[in-house]
Length: 105
Image 1 (cartoon, rainbow, N blue to C red):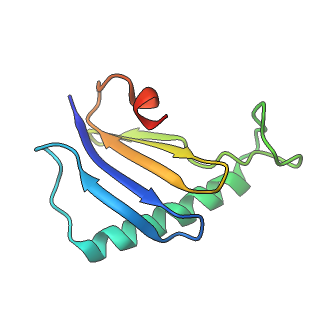
Image 2: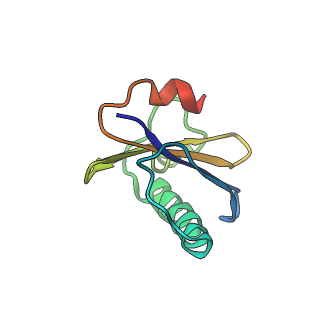
């Protein structure tokens, strides 16, 4: 159990920072990180528009606007926190890692 990577994506999809957080973190090249950041940004935006459920506190009166908050599968957990300014903090960790929410906040 442990954290793998932290990456920060700006509101237009550009990668601001990527950092491996543990020895089990896979080694990924800079170009791949840029691609992962922009792809995650796009998927997050599509998920926000496609979600049929409006959660309490959403700003969008027509539907959900939260996008991707958590993905779990394949031996990894991806957790995302989007700020009010649109910056996304994305943390990946091994399953069973405690306190992912508190680390992102």
